Image 1 (cartoon, rainbow, N blue to C red):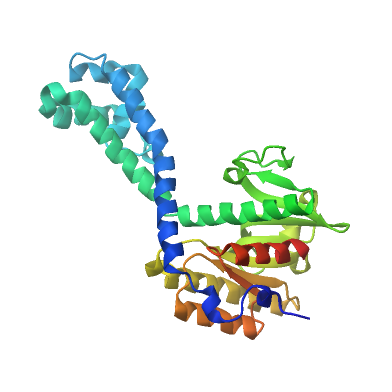
Image 2: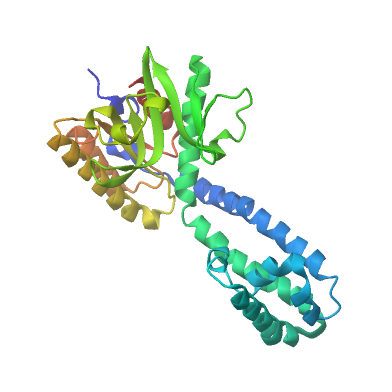
Length: 317
């Protein structure tokens, strides 16, 4: 039987990320950063409009509808604000006004907005550190859904916020932004795919797990049952070549733990790797693992043909 990775790979060089793909990846990151920044810009505009009612900066402290915005401008993050007493919040706002807005004179509104955006920029930076993984998940999700549409197969999806399994909608636009799992059938057998699973068997976090069960049957007991795992995979979407080796080390360690843990239970689920930035040395290592059977499949996230192929394989298990 032909090894699944040979459907789309001939040599390790096929796994390497091209310069064009890296460039496109950085553009995609820039667009995503702008998308995420939009709400912060709108918040700043709303703060400016509301604060402009004040004739002096001293009046800001008594404007109840902008207290949260003032606290942000004072450098207090949303997370930190939850741990502060009301008196601490007032002190932070008083410090903002006396130490910074007073010095700005008549331009105190502009100073307020600038400082608000400075804190929000830090929030944006934190969210962007994980954006590679989010974009990778969305891209693979779109490929899986496209496969179902082309093949005429039905599926359900797990809403990340409500935790509810929902039937596939007629309009799937933006579905990948809210999705945390997928479920479908292979013949009469149920398949359930979950992203970001803490697998007790390998005692590790796994990016993707495919289970031999329906969503309703997916429980903590299923997580502890080695035979319930059909496939486990690592999905690393970072596109920066400078961080590729570190991402691969993390994935390789996770895959090694999976292999060893399931072997102790005399079970061998399918394992795979999908990466965005794959450098030559890394590609050779992955190819060696494929040829030796340590992992069964791999693909470069930036190659549409490879992703379509590994999607078909995953959905056929």
